Image 1: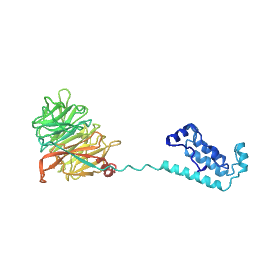
Image 2 (image 1 turned 30 degrees about the horizontal axis):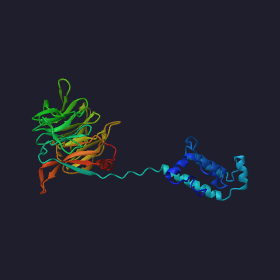
Image 3 (image 1 turned 180 degrees about the vertical axis):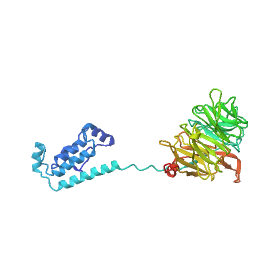
Image 4 (image 1 turned 180 degrees about the horizontal axis):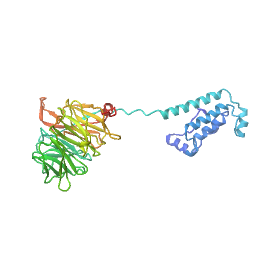
Amino acid sequence: MLAGRAAFSGKDVTDILAVVIRAEPEWSSLPANLHWRLKEVLERCLKKDAKDRYHDISDVKADIQRVLTDPAGGRGQPAAADKAQRRHRVGLPWVAVIAALCIIIAGVAVWRLKPAPPPEPRQVVRLDYELPKDQQLSLYYSTLALSPEGRKLVYSTNNGLYLRPVDELNAKLIAGTEGDTQQPFFSPDGKWIGFVSSGSLKKISINGGAPVTLCAVTQPSGASWCEDNTIVYGEWDIGMLSMDGARERKTLLHHEYLEINPKISPDGVYVAYTSGESGRNEVYVRPFPNVDKGKWQASTNGGANALWSPNGRELYYLSENNSVMALAVETKLAFSLGTPKPLFQSRYVGSLPGEGTPWDISPDGRRFLMMNEAQSTSGAQGGSRKINIVVNWLEELKQRVGERPTR
């Protein structure tokens, strides 16, 4: 701007960058009557060594203010510069030069302080995985689960449990689960799958083989395999089974009303479950394993099948009107829950209590996997089902779950 030409020039970008690194600007191209302090400002701004350059824009501002207080440049200037300066006294043109530099500096400061624009919200996408013709999801207790690392999907059908790597097209029947098998869930290390069959809670290797019977269960509905190798399960009441030693059983909750579908929080200190204590099914949260130390109602106007986010900061459940609900969870100072907000709506299998846990969330918290009714060519809902994958639902959550927890 001052010299009427670029400080560095070259044939192309590569050549210009090379000149910037090895050469100095042609300082002689600057106006002869340029204030000596401004020349020093420019030289310091373009020093090759970062240690010699200005460290903050406020330092540049301070030097420019010195120019404004001494437009003639007579104070403190070098002897050589004083002789030249006397031949070219500064007049009104300096006001324009200084104003231009101030505008540039102000623009740089505003650019640095201006927050980056928010990213464009990603569109929520729903993908379907249709089961092969020889597979049908169980009418009741139809459930699915993702492995802890998110690479495998297991689901229950009329033929048994099927395991499908998420990066492959085909699922394989797990040998040893043929027949009436329901409600699969993974062990924390992903090497075992727990399930219900013939009135018993069992486990089997993901590679198949002979299933191991753990304990008898009546009216089973939902289970969680904890990091301490304990399984928490629902069967009207909520019980706990230690997988170590003698496999001791303990009843956590026992009342005259329904209490099912327990889900342990990622940090292992809370349990969310479905209860009919109010006369309708609602989702509640209690401390775990000391369930008598507190109780919080999570859902309003009916809810079931709770699910924690991987980081434990949100809780999800299915409402009576087929909406997926989300609410914030606060645990830093004291446990509290936010106001439930609808995330999206559809008729998913397992929206009602007693159908088992019909959905799961990926370990990165970006995908829901749910079971959706498949329709026949005539439009009627058939016995076959499809697995629905909801992607980018977090964008809806950011918009809908904004309040801090209040309950």
